[in-house]
Structures are given as structure tokens and as C-alpha cells.
Length: 165
Image (cartoon, rainbow, N blue to C red; front, side, top):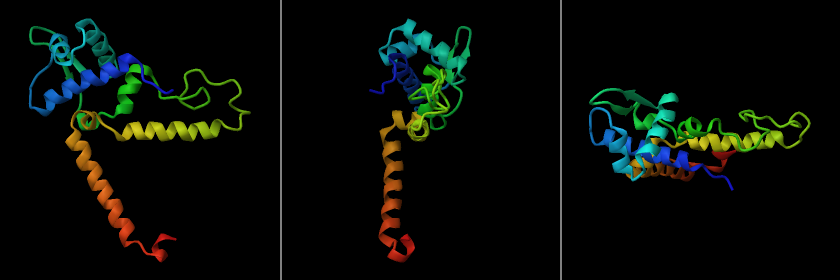
């Protein structure tokens, strides 16, 4: 089973809290205490996640009385793949894909390694296509999907046998 670790899941929750605050026009930074209260996660867990997200460049840390964390870019510009990579490293389903941190010893002689690369690339591309905004605002995601579906339907209905080949 392919599964994200718990801290990556929590990172998506924490970033969703921040994206929601951004969406509702809240200015300034959110403290780990605020994020903890809004997310239901423990403050020490939030602090640990924020440190990793800060090191990855997804959030800015501000010190001082009114300090806290803020997103470095709009939620629409943060891909789910970026969140996963910030918490877990490169997306690599098997040791034989290019992004693997510990390459497979038989990669050069294996006849299926290229196929795993295609699978890995497809999954990474799908995760790149989903943003933090998509996770936090179902209407945003739905409206984009409706437009894409309508475009595909219109293209399919206007296609003729000659234009398909």
C-alpha cells in the first residue's frame, strides 16, 4: 500500500489552516498555538512540522511578540507534491526510479525499471496538479474540474472521425 506518513498528513492539515486564514483575508502570521487550536493537533507537533516546512521554504518564520508563521506563496502555488517532498523527500515508489535516495543495485540490468519510472512520473505529475487551494476549498477544485470536463466533452462531441485520426 502506498501511504503518506502521519507527519506529512499533519503538514497538509497545518498548511490548510494557514491557507484558510489566507483565504479569509487574515493578515500577519499565525503562532503554533493558534494553528494548534484551529487544527486540533498538539502544539509540539505543530512546532515540529513548522520547522520542517520553514526549512523547505513553504512558510516564513517571524520572531517576536507578534511572530508566527505565514505562507511563502499563495495556496494556489503550493502543489501537494511539494508538501510531500518537504516532509518525506523525493517521491520515489521504488529504488529503481531516478528520484530514489538509495538506488537499486540491479537498476542498469533490470528490464522493468523504465516502467516503474513511468508509474512514478505519473503519480508525481498527478500530485503536482493538485494544490493546497484544491485541498482547502472544495468549490475551487470542483469548478476547475467542471470546466475541464466540459472542455473535454465539447471537444469529444465536435470531433469527427477524420479529426480523431
